[in-house]
Image 1 (tube, rainbow over the protein chains, first blue to last red):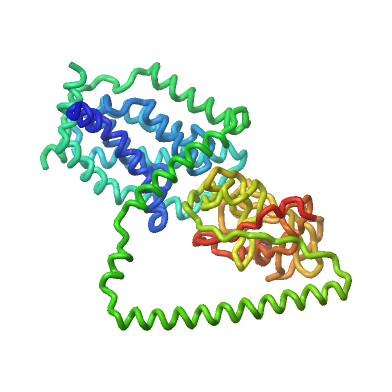
Image 2: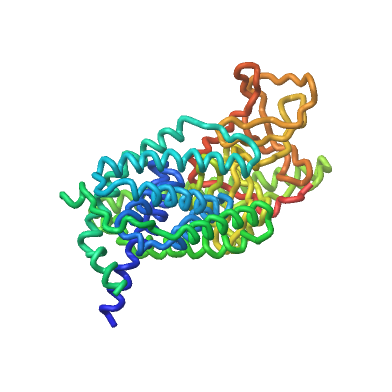
Length: 173
Length: 275
């Protein structure tokens, strides 16, 4: 019984880490740094890369909707951007056999910039007017890019400690 | 470390099927459409989720060890005696102020009766804390720590001692959401300057608040005060909002409050439609 609980907690770690980052972004970091609504994509990117089977699309949809509810965005808008980025990453994923960290970082930079522009476009479309593009948006992108290696490193430690790769295959048996 | 820098991806097939992508993307688009067109009541869903989210946060915060309490254990007796003395002094001062204010209130009421003025508008307000600053580039709103439990209603004015910051747009059980005056969806009827020029103000998600629906050839002076007009029953009249600023032949309003640094605000209770 206890081992079952431990097992399910472990395999739901990717989802829990995403929820944790949403909470951190709202309650802690917003007082110091403005990461923006796409901050959670850092964790989504990592888990889609390493354990895509532990992060199904409906979890990404729910994470996006949760953010929309808290930030008063139109429900589904953040989820749409996340799904679009995951779709693009899915296509990129087939291009490299063994991507290095630099390759992944470059991919993240490109995807994050695409996501930010798409999010601005979507919000402008919903409000039927071009929303102002401010310098803060650039700071937000730079801040996310700066914190990506830190996030990646921390999540990688958990990934190794929890043996998530092994658990993924165990579950599939 | 090597595994951290070089990732071997075993599965080179698609991570997800194209059908599932299409399904979820269409689902997201439908949700956006329903929410924007207000086909689904998103307020109900928001209410439930925000209440449970913030209750979870409060639960964790209340169970964390309180560092301030631990600090108290190390306070000396001399410090406690000094603190006690200063607190007693403060109590005496505050009761003196209370007496003075009561005296002034009575005097004020008597004078008003002598002048046969109309009874003053009832101004009940509560002081609330900003629980979460949910401002992004695209939405300017904050969540405050009072809701239905404190009799807050949709449309109530939110302000600081400097002036108006926004209005309550969603009320949950223990929390409410305030739409700031800088939000693109905010519309407030105002009057400007000594000439009492009527206008509507709207945000554009920046610090510069715009004026709408102005008559032709209206001229504003720099630093003219902008305040609520009370038209349409929105807010009490005369709440200051900001001052007129000019830049490159365009006019905008500079808010009296720094909207990115709000911690405590007042909510005027039940002033809505109070003419």
